[in-house]
Length: 268
Image 1 (cartoon, rainbow, N blue to C red):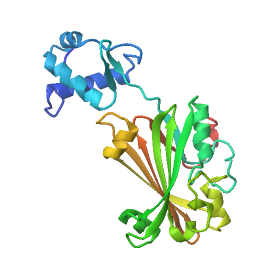
Image 2: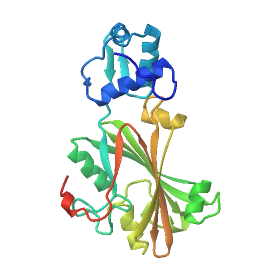
Image 3: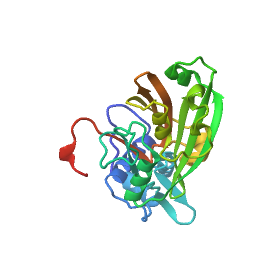
Image 4: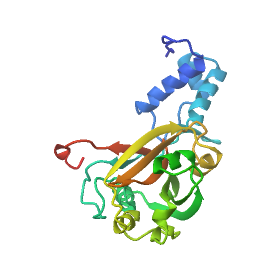
């Protein structure tokens, strides 16, 4: 087995890592089967032991492989969960005030976890903080104005899954259940609807970035695993209602967007 040099020169260990990724994607190894030992990969590719070790290090840092002392190197598989970020609901939503999953209520996450045979849990807290510049801009506030942040730390099968933070103007949240450090029956959407601030539209921004130290510690991912960050601004007829920033570990979540008429898709 030889390594293609490709159109751009790159270190041999990176080309070896790329071919190992290809073989992993092709399903050549399973999670319960150890990869060939370094000596075997050295013979397969005709490279030095250090090249093999560096290539495997790359995939370990990416969170694709894990070394188990005395057992070998295995695929590190985090089951991927599809989250319907936006689109016509597959079934009637449990919150009647919600349209098209504009700000997916917790019941949507629960239903997705149940369908995948996973156990969803969450830790909840409420904070009053100074608005970041980007949040203030999206809500039409001055930087540094107070905002209410409702944070959920979601776990699947006790493994960190997402950090969701909903940012509200202090004037919107004041005197409502949004100020309580607990989930709201019916979801935050029900509180907003009762205030006459029912969300009718939203704009999403998706970016990928590396986690900060605290995020890396919480997600417990490989040092090379990025976060997928979804920032959603929801609107009613009067303007922006809230900013929802949700961070997912990119190896554990796939965001699904449905656009247009999807009746023919059925329940797939």
